[in-house]
Each structure stands twice: as structure tokens, then as C-alpha cells.
Amino acid sequence: MAVGDRRNSRAWERRRNEIVDEAARLFAARGYHATGVAELRDTVGLGRGALYYYIDSKENLLSLIHDRVIVHVLAAGNKAEGLEGTASERLRYLSRELIQIVTLYPDHVWVFLHEYRSLSAAAAGTFRSSRQSFENSIESILIDGVQSGEFKIANTRLSALAWLGLHNYIYIWYRPGRTFTVDMISETFSDTFLNGIVVR
Amino acid sequence: MAVGDRRNSRAWERRRNEIVDEAARLFAARGYHATGVAELRDTVGLGRGALYYYIDSKENLLSLIHDRVIVHVLAAGNKAEGLEGTASERLRYLSRELIQIVTLYPDHVWVFLHEYRSLSAAAAGTFRSSRQSFENSIESILIDGVQSGEFKIANTRLSALAWLGLHNYIYIWYRPGRTFTVDMISETFSDTFLNGIVVR
Image (cartoon, rainbow over all chains, first blue to last red; front, side):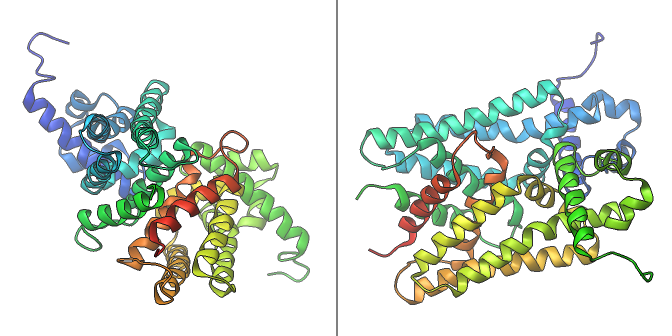
């Protein structure tokens, strides 16, 4: 990096996030492969050099789109694991947080769930370990609930995958303002899932 | 169609299904846009003219991949709606059928869930109405259960979407022989979901 390079400054990061969000919108609407760099440049109003000052490469955009969302997902998972309260309460908290993230970033979620096979090997490794880490957060709350006698679960890994599918699939049908609110979705999903595993 | 054209014969249909299945595998592994027609021709061992004798166009392959799976999904939905038995029993039946289909055709499901934005307008209309029809089958069983006093559900549409997400998302993580059996997944999911909505 040259002396005086403003990369990693706040202004640079803000501008980069704008570009990443715009790319997520374009890729979600037309597909990653079908969208050219020229089209992206036109949309964000940057020349070739200026664009690469922010994003390195088109392929790297996929990682950046992923990172922009996963940081919130992992933070929510870690916070939920460490919360005071019953396993049910912690899972309810995580449900609401995850639905909030999915509904705030539907394009990003679309892109990284659909295009992760286009990630570079290194980025694919990061993607897998992030997903694993989040699945572990969910499973660890389920295990806590089983150990405390709160939940009855045949296989906590399978139940963690069930919980994740229940929540992740929202990105397919959710449209802001057109369907259900985050609170209503989260409450219904948590009521159903928790009633399904709670010991009476 | 010329006189003597063997299209729609059994042999033609069988060969076409092989091509569709091979295309699903290729598209799932590399993406629809990234896979060229030449690559597909090499894989199935056909020249350009011979390939188009079976599939019309690359775009049409997306519809064919979709049709190959959705016919089973819709049949399962219709059969479940018409079954004798409680709403719980019918939903259990549908769960097992859907998981069986998703695990038999993971590549096809991958392709049509990921690439439906690349469908032609007419094919996209068919895709939407098939999805709607299947969602209606699920919801109608849930409504039956509410009306008979078997289920307590705040919003049957939202619960139908929850049930669908729970099941559809399997295609993301399921690997034949490497994870759980169809029976185990279906039993766990049905137990959890039904315990979550059944009136005690």
C-alpha cells in the first residue's frame, strides 16, 4: 500500500460498503455470472481503476458481500450463547436477531447462499467455517437445554439444522412491508419450534 | 414436427431425462450461467443438432429440470390433501414424501431454487403457480387441523412457509449416506413441528 493510501479509512470503508450493497442488489437480481463489471461500474459511477481501489476483483465482491452479513450473524450467535436466561429465551433471542438480519440484507443472503460455489478456495473455507461456527452456537444452546432438562431432542445436530432451515428460508419469500413483520415471524417460529422440543 | 419424428416416444423421453439429469448435475456443480452448451454436449456425448432434438434450448433445460421434480412434489401434495386420517398423519406423510424427493433430486432442487430468476417469463409463471399450489396443499392440511381442533395456529400461511422452509432447506446440507436417513430427518422434523402446533 502506497504512503498516503486512504484504504481502511472511514470514508473508504463507507464507500466500499455502498459498492458491496449495490453489487449484492445487482447480483441478486441478475445473478453473479450474468452481471458484468462494466454494469457494476455504471451503477456505482466509478471507472475501472477507482472500482478496484475499493474491491480488488469481482470475485472478491462475493467474499465482501458474505462478510458484510456474517459478522452480524456470528455476533448474534455468540451473544445468544453467552446470555443469561433459559435455553428457550436464548433461542428466542437468536431467532429474532437472525430474522432481523435476513430481512435487512435479503440480497446479500440471496447472493452468498446461491453463489458460494463461485467463491475462491480461501473464501470458501471462511464461508464454511463461519457456517459451522453459527451451527455450533445453535447446537450449544440446544445441548444446554437438554442438559438442564428443559428440552427433549433426539439429535441436537439435526435439530440445529432444522432450526436453521426454518429461519434461513425466509429470504426466499420475505418482501419488506408486503408479508409479515419480523416480530410476527420470529414469535410464530419460536413458539412452534420451542413447543416442539420443550419438556412438559 | 416432421412425419416420422420420434419425439415424445418412450426412447426419446428416456434419453431426454438422462440429459436433463446430467444438466442438473453440471449446473448444480458450476452454475447455470458458467456452464456452456458445448460442455453439456461433451458430457452427454451429443452433437449440437442431436442435443437440440431433445431439449430445444439451454434456457428450456431450466424448465425441464424444474418439471422433472415438481411433478412429484405436486402429486405428493395432492395425495396428502386427499388422504384419510388426521391432519397430523397427512402432514407426516407429506414430510416424508418431500424429503424423499429432495434427497433423490438434490441437484435439480439446487438448480431450480437458485436459477429460477433465469427462467423465461412463461416458465417463471409455471414455477410460481406450482410453488403456490404446493403451499396451498400444505396450508389446506393446516386449516383442516385447525378446524377439527387438532392444531392451534396463529397464521396458517406463515406456518405453511415455516413447514416448507424446514423441509426445503435440507438440499443445502444433505449428502447421501453421509448424514441422516430420510426416515430420521422426517421423523424429527414432523415430531418437532407437530408438537409445536398440536393442541393438548
